[in-house]
Image (cartoon, rainbow, N blue to C red; front, side, top):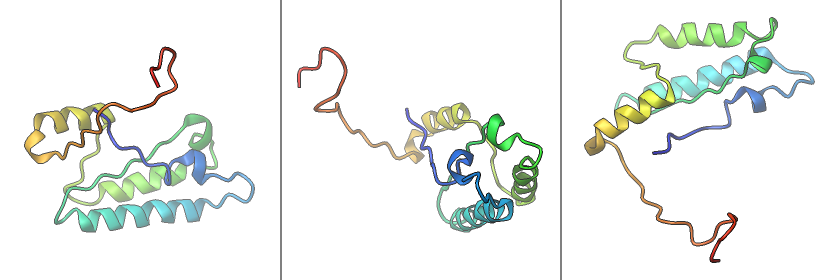
Length: 115
């Protein structure tokens, strides 16, 4: 099982470092959350945020995820889960979980490939 992974709110791409704007990053997180939360009233939605200690863990950056998580937690009916918990839930609720069978890749770069 693969749990979807988004890159656009990942701290590694959200911190251009030169001229980094913490307010803009925080607003992007809030806007993403607000939209998905609104859509979540009628269908399942998931927001993935990837944070790296060497990036978001700096003293001048750590307040952004802290403020965002405080904001997100202030909303009812939001589940904060690790990827393994999401995968376990999806496997337990297969009737509610869309499954896309992509089949085998016709060509791959692994040694011994028949392609």
